[in-house]
Length: 280
Length: 334
Image (cartoon, rainbow over all chains, first blue to last red; front, side, top):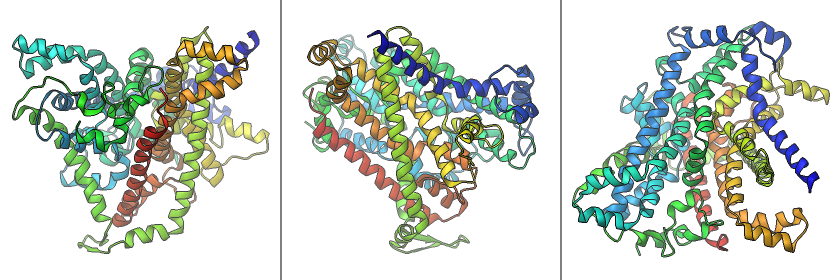
């Protein structure tokens, strides 16, 4: 019995090593100088150039236009992550409320209209989506960055399911007390959904922050680049340079993963709840 | 009972998707709330207002119509047209775009690679995730720490994982390249087709392990203690117990994850691939989604790219239908 436990721990430690080591190495290496990395390879020790490298990455004005800084990109990532998460919650709660708490003739039809969006991810319709955005003149805007990503029903179904599990007695009681649809929603349903909203918020923030394909298509103006979108640009600059700025690339990678990783680690319980109960 | 329940097989199997008292992901979206199932479980009391529900639905519907239905219809439409390269209108060409795509050796090669890539990523991500979940479920000491350390990579974006992967597979500084040299394998990512494919699989699997781990672990923790104890009395071999008792109980989770992982390998790995091939797709392995992107945005082949989009839509559609069918038939033993 004892021996099998030791064996279990060895496998788990190996798993932890494989999952954690690359990122630790990335962080440690980012604190070295580029030439040093070029000579000695990746590093597991502290290089002592943490402040310089991260300061450079965050504040140096780079890119083709020479205007975008790492800090700007971080801000854009934040706008995308927050905008997407908040938008998703607002839209899907309202839609789910209509579907669950109202009796109206087209309910089934609309349920299907919304349900169908689950069948096709954005990736399979990128080109026509891009054309639509061009027609609407929404390329290189925050609206164009965020709103099309909201066109999927995941959140709606999640809240629909949750609303259905809310006891009917609450609505009956609220109606006896004279509460209308708005009052019931704001004073009863929203407070009841708080945990659900937090869980969904975390999932959606991480999902939004990590978007890559859509921002790549939608933003050609560097002022709208997100950190994740900026990664490609760094790699393109690399091709042809003698000593690539390994340190800065790693630093940017670390910055790009920091906020979502922090959120997942700190709110782990809600994160797992949101993930296993909502899928995406 | 509304038509929704009748049309959607999963709705009838709604309560069947439970494992040890909890429901799973997307399935429960369509499942009913109670045993009565489906839409009939809607509220006994509802508001009756002539315009309010439409008001609440309006924002969601507007976005879906503009950003989902409009482009989807356009994709299907332009897949039947040949766009003039200079922008002077387009001509209807029927199925030509489809036959061109399906006859092209390049496309079929990419399709074959995508299939192999998807199979490998799905297999390794699932089995490593399952192995770690089973072990994490078994140990008591350090349980919470293991869990945190194993899931946090979920939050890393695919292209960021790709960037870190690039460094580890770098010609000059990559430790994996150095390790492989010991065994006489000279890895050249970006130059050698097989090596690039290998590194793409490694990075994609690495990124997906936490997701599978989370779901397998919560599936395992949903198995009642009484079942485990009964199994332990009946069967002393832990290994056999796992195959005959635990794994069948995990089947719904595993199947759900299978579909999710296939979707991940098909679509979400775009970031990994884009970073790792760095626009030099010439001799490098790419997936079908990447090909759609290349043809549409680099090659300006609107018709061909749209035809490919529609083919992908069909694949996803079949996967989804398969998912519902399968759940209805297989996963009924609770």
